[in-house]
Length: 298
Picture (cartoon, rainbow, N blue to C red):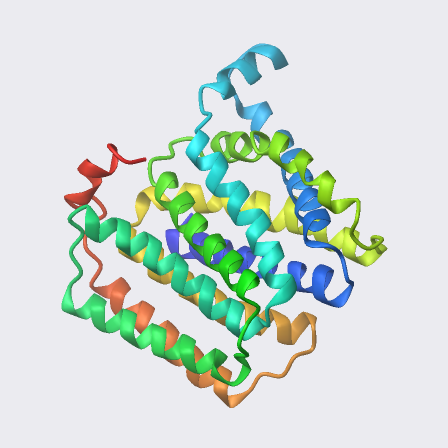
């Protein structure tokens, strides 16, 4: 299946994650800890159904034993930090500020890692980044309020954690099993959230379904695809293409939440997608010199 199509589907699922989260937490009043728990448990259940039948071994015990070899503590921690910080940040910060903060944090963490490991950006790629960020800034400029400090920190941590989780995923050779293990090993931490979630508002049926769909569909399938395509992308390309997610999110919000498609969105989408296209056209081979040094860190 063409990498372009898989990438588009993956980014659309990422955008759906944001829509589900906004709907459950902001529209339906679900608590962020409760949302994170349900989303993660639904993802674990869906991933188990997808991963275990394809895992070598004659019985469940053998399959689980082989899966244990894929445990990566760093990936587990990065994933958990992203999951909880994303929910907490989105609950207390408006969509414009959260979009800007999380995307900037993702780019800074990924490119910062790359530049520290001998990554080189071409002039065309630098121009593509500037163009895409101008589009992102323009997209959210009318909806940025000074955020709650704690929420802003959580949103930044979510972006940084996702960037690190992405870097780890560039070495994945078994995306389905690896994603299952990454989610499953967050379970002890997810259960600890019960200490906070028991004090959160009562769950509505709509919020419950939104959290389940976010986990079982958007997260489980989206993260499998992400780990599947990452080894085929360079670090700089895997970073910048994520700037398309706010555009896709805005389009989905217009369809699902009946938000307006404005001239601002059209102009911003043109800038963002144009910047990505420029970087894509002049993308270097994935095996940059940084990749050899990457192993010593993650």
